[in-house]
Length: 594
Image (cartoon, rainbow, N blue to C red; front, side, top):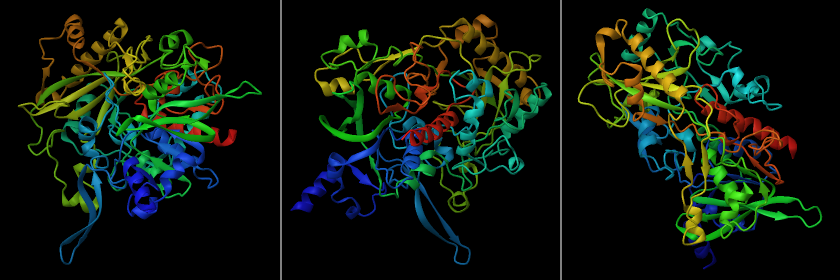
């Protein structure tokens, strides 16, 4: 009878130790530990940051670590449900294929758009952030790119200059390209494998030829400090042709350790804070969470050393606000749900930043007939299943450019991807899409707040989506920058061979003045999911700062934020590489401080 009750608890809570749910005997009895055990570290959020922290903090077997993720399983290793094929071996003698493991759409690079669009997501408009073990690292386009050196120097925070963060970028990365094997600009022994996948696509090769004819220089390393020219992107794709992200490279290893517990399908609503009688210090003691299948029942997990929020730039500030950490005047309007303000930090939820982009569509007459679109049903072919090569081992694109304001100004302001077909729709013609994104948006005042509704119950309040105030193109400078990007892309496309192979469709060639392009952009610009900045790192005299340079929340002991929230400013790049750097550096800081 005792084991039957424990079994019911296990099935109800979806809790598992050592992550892989192979034999149920591995988790019998462990659910009671969750409520009774004093963990040293409780990590909130199983995205890229959380996966890295889980590995690093559990490396010392004396540390008991709990990782809590609101989403469910993802990869084949974690028994994700979205299986699209297998990996295995082919017996050359008998011509018999033997599968060794399952693959989900979160591992096969060409499925990144399927994972992004059809995967489980939070209901936070206008974002599309995933709600799944592995977080955004499971569904992004896998472009691996750091910011320029000035980005980190301009953060203006002690110990976070380029010189300070470069070793952690190197710690993350293992560059696989032979021509960069001796490069001092890359890491060579990190866990995230990085490489180019081109040239393999005709549209990419043709585009680079047009760039050359248009006078845009070739950039042999998009992770150099030069943001100019055309070239091949580097992707976090491993030598087996699979996505290389923290859930695969960090958490799979960590999950085999007996001192790490992983809880999925659990949504943290607040940090439990106590005021010490003798010192008056406010101290994080753990977290409160509910199970997705019973949002009316709350549970508590205890942390003796630290609580670490790694829930991302939308969820970490939401949890802080619900915990009574934020602008005290603002939080007073929620006193029936948040009775105590523990730290008056007006910057929580402020400083919200993101890149945004426009997609222009072209009729590309040379597109191969068998070229898959992002909405085709991809066939798991034998070549990929056995060798990890072929188009499935790529994201479907390889090249792009850093676009100058004009042909004579040798400094870039927009980054552009050359994508096959269209994203979000299917065309009646063979198409390519040019995705043009501002690398350095103008200063703005975007922010995140709690829902205006107090909800019919506390659980309803906690489940309410935050209000994300992110107004696209409300700065004239950003409109002008994107207009220049479209015009520069058209200039490049006017050179052979693209000049004879592609014609603009969206917007068409009749929309060509600055005013016409600006008008088109007003309804055709989209946010990335590069949300950052909502728990800004800085100094106590900065009213918008939420954490110090050790990522400790001001006014609260034993509480840190380690994710994209802490970035003072967006880097001139996609953000995933920077997020992983922050997690690696943050882990070292935590271990040193403790």
